[in-house]
Image (tube, rainbow, N blue to C red; front, side, top):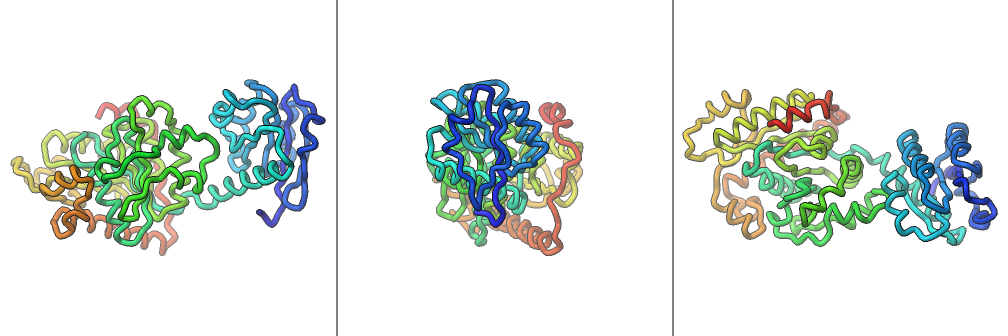
Length: 401
């Protein structure tokens, strides 16, 4: 799988004898065994001395020392995958291994060829993720107040990208009450919760199997079907997931809940573009102003930030000049109110396909065109993603918004 052989270090837990698994060890042109070390303390020293491409930990039982070594190795050497060879029943141990950061778990006995293939695959996955990370732009759609049409905006923008010939992915990060599936008329057969439960290494091939296709060509990673399932989805998982999605798509969009939760902040920090969504009413505009201030404290402002104003021609007695004074900026997109938007939600059809000639559909398609133009310009000059100045420092303030 690689022109250069994979340099693998085997570290044996304290209760493992070399003779019990040495028949499974097969080197060769593609796999070079740089060491077999007894004891995890000695194994840790060998990692620093040999700088292997792959760490193989051999264990017979659940030990805190083994789990600690997996976690520490993945943090200190993120480019070096960890595979566990396990002599016994993996029930009860598998999830703890994956939670600690292992890339794969192989239950012995296994043929030498099967082990070698799994080791090579783990390295190929990790190298592929590193090479592809951060290639595609990512838009995080935010709305400090619920009911502003943020999910509607996310769905219409994502479908507009698909209709423009791009290969987008829309992630529903409203983990407790996500409605992207309903808004687009698709059933959540596999969700982000199922992806977490699957365990193992995140890579493009694996994640693809949990995406739900939409007739437009858009792919969806849907929210859990029950609120209680949200607790299993941790912030580190979200960060890793977004990296993989950006390596396998033309553009990633993230629909978020109306809060600055840790998962939302992780998405904000990972995004190349932010889009705040508000509506033409006094309460929404006030919360939108607080949201803009929060994002500015986190280091996000300027050309990477857009503001979409939904129901922009409502009869609330608020003029566009009032909007600009309240927000301290001019909205980038005005989406007029349209009864077909409400009908489209009921039918699971975005306005850009339900009534493509409507002013609302034109507004969302124009927003997609603006983004595509920016993506092309950034690619032409080799621009890198915007880096946040601060992230979690604004968490307390954001929750108060």
